[in-house]
Structure formats: C-alpha cells, structure tokens
Image 1 (cartoon, helix red, strand yellow):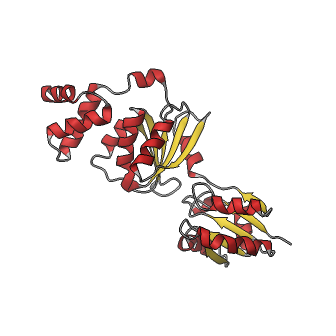
Image 2 (cartoon, helix red, strand yellow):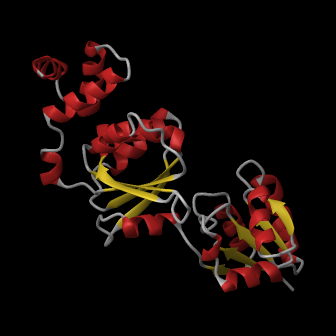
Image 3 (cartoon, helix red, strand yellow):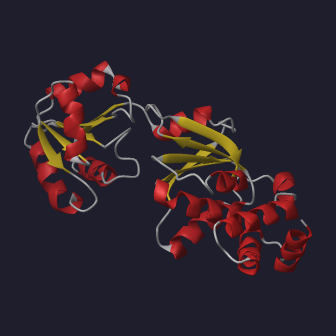
Amino acid sequence: MSGKLFVVGTPIGNLGDITYRAVETLKNVDFICAEDTRVTVKLLNHFDIKKQLVSYHEHSAMQVSESIVNRILAGESCAVVSDAGMPCISDPGEDLIRQCIDKEISIEVIPGPTAMASAVAVSGLSTSRFSFEGFLSVTKKQRYEHLESVAKDTHTLIFYEAPHKLVSTLNDMLEYFGNRSISLCRELTKIHEEVIRTTILGAIEYYTDKNPKGEYVLVVEGYNKEYTAKEITIDDAVAEAQRLISGGMRAVDACKEAARITGLKKSDIYSKLQSK
C-alpha cells in the first residue's frame, strides 16, 4: 500500500509560528525531505523531533527524487519542508509534487507561514490582486525580460531578493517600472523585522549609505497610467546623480547613469545639477 507525501509549512523566522499540526506531522512521518538539512535539524531539535533527513535541493533533486517516490510507494510517509515558509513554491519541491501526482501518490498539505503573503498584508499597497514573481534571474537577459513582461501589470507585484543584490534590483526596477511605491519587508517575524514603505527611488537613496541586511520581500505597486505618466521628475534624476557622485563617480558619468536609469536627458540632468 502506498504511503503519503505531506507538504509542511515551517516558520519563516520565529519558531513560535509553527502549527500544532505541523509538529505532529513531522513527528509521525517516516522521513523528512529538507532543502538544507542543517537548517531543518535546528527546527527539529527545538521540538525534540528525531527523524531521518533526506537532502533535497536544486542540485540533488534529480538524483534523489526517484528514491523518495519509491519509498513512498513502498508504504512510507514523507514530509517535505523548505528552509522557511511553504515548500514547493520557488524551490525543487515543485518537481517532487509533480512526480507524486504522476504516480498517484496521496498528497496532503499542512499550511504554514509564507513570507509573500505576510509582506503584502503589511505593505500598505493594494491586496485585492497580486502576483508572486519570486526571485529575478541573475542572468541579465532573463532578468530584463522578466521585468519588461510585468511592467504593465496593474496588480501588485511581489519579489524575493537577497541583500547583496538589492540595490542592483532596485535600479533595474526603476528603469522598467518607473518610480512607483514599494514596500521593502526585511527579516519578517525575526528580531530585526523592518518594513520600509517608500518609492523605488527613495529606496535607492535610503541604501546609499546603509548596507542591506537580511532577506527581503519587495512589494511593488502595479502599473497605473496616471501615476507613471508623471513618474520621474528632473529633481528625481538629479538626486540620483548626486547619490552616485557621493559614491565617488564623476559628475558627467553620474549624469549619464542617472539618464539611463530615469529615461531623462543627460544634458538636462547635468544643467540642473550645475545650477544647484
């Protein structure tokens, strides 16, 4: 008789957010598939759970998925978890789900916290319609194609981003989206939780002298014709040039880069900068 796959949501930071049902499920399954066993073992130790852990991440998924499916078909029960939040969303568990469906294995979901839903709830932006876009590609061509494809979407957009790529991503968003409202949610449910509600340009300026820390959820305002028609002023462009100059860039180069980001003329930005 076939076993069952349990999709178990885990805390995104605060361990107190785990559900009773999730704890009981993790205690009762035969083995657990984890994105990073070093992270998951800390969670299990906290709740005194002793179970076999199977590493299941993007580099090992192809090799171990068949073994996992065969064990479930043989009658074992398995829980799949991610490092934080709901598994199988923007992680390799998605493929395991499909394989279990193909083999007609029973799947049960144990819901838990999700960073994207938590972030949009406190963003202050529209929550009636939103789209989860996940991580942008590190490949420039795919990254730009992704941003261009959603630039005219009218619903709120949600992205995940790592701290070392945040400023670069904000600059790319400014170029493709214009200076929209944005909510930057950092370290949700953790000690240093922070939500910054500003504009994309305001966020770039904020991180001029401040190093981004922790994992970010970026909640971006959807496309609005009236808003984007007046989105970036010459003063916005000059402020961006000044930010670049303060970072050591020559004025002429700063104006050129500000022009690329804002879409305004380099000569206009330079003239306005000189008049200040």
